[in-house]
Length: 269
Image 1 (cartoon, rainbow, N blue to C red):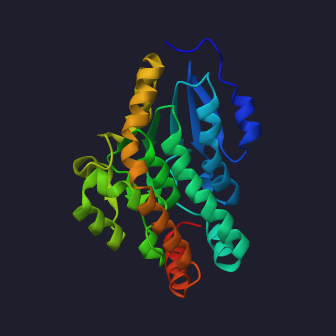
Image 2 (image 1 turned 90 degrees about the vertical axis):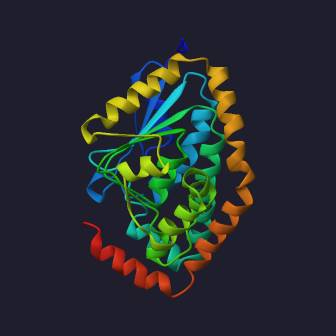
């Protein structure tokens, strides 16, 4: 039962130029995290648009479902090094990015449209927040999900304290978040982090067909079910706010420098 109105991709490109968009099926907006040479790491512009785009989607009557993915072989490798350096060095940048990180989470939670994530390759940091806050996350078997904050030298902020204990339980959340332990798509499905795990080569098609089913359903039934379910996340809002504040406090302490250098050596140039 897609809307008769067409989704305006040009309007989204104009409003959120750091992202790419497509309409693969009627009523389905595809949001593409695109910084392929850097494994889709979020620079300042991409981080800003990832936080804001969900409000536009929520208000767009032509959109009935969203599919979010990364360009190429990866979902998103987390924060771009230049953005992290800016946050470390500049108070205004720290406050700006803190607000964007909060907005990203709450805007996804409050977005009325059902969101499907197609997760291939690396999904880390802010990218992992988008992947796991999607209503239905579908991961490839060799996908690599990792929160990564403690490895960087800051508290696990972004989304992790909000949703990991609810998805996989407190014991597993403690293990994976404290150790920054990576999780494959297969393990993520087994412990409940994602809804489904499929072969890498069919991730996009499975996610697209899931988005099609959502777009063909009753908009009010799906949106109101999502609204009710996400009250579990709203209840955990104070926990998330505290974790995010502690994460950004960490950007003013010495450990972040050593952590950033270690991560920089491991990530492809």
